Image (cartoon, rainbow, N blue to C red; front, side, top):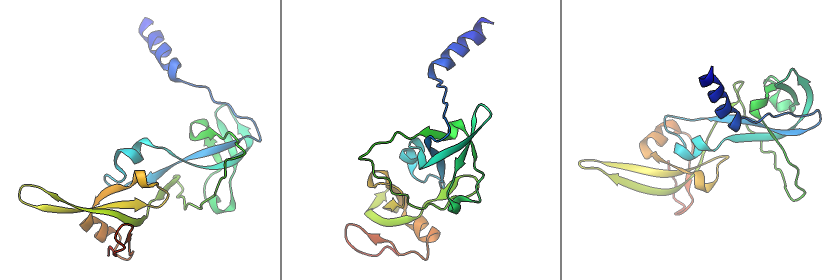
Length: 170
């Protein structure tokens, strides 16, 4: 009995009870589809949210119905409270609603925008060409190093332009 109460007390220190009311605006959590090591640690540690959306109905204790736009009609409009984050309005905050094509499991696929840097990693008996890729919906700080041959194989039709030298990638 004592062990479970101790575990409960440790868990309750980090747990926060979220509760929203009808008409509140919230952000909705979505996750990017990552390749084998796409985005590295930065993408893994930084969650992605879209919105804000209005809450139209409370369903039970931990579920809410959101007013989603018509472009997201294929997604069910009821979400668990853990997937929501309260939006705090700020008059200087300008929101641009950039359309993201979401799949039914609330994930999206990142597309490369450009190449920031090139580098050749030298090992003992081989050289690996790497490129620093800027991704759509990501900042420059979240650009990742990818193998050049894998980028050519995965995105054969796209033409990426280097942001530094202006040379074409593919």
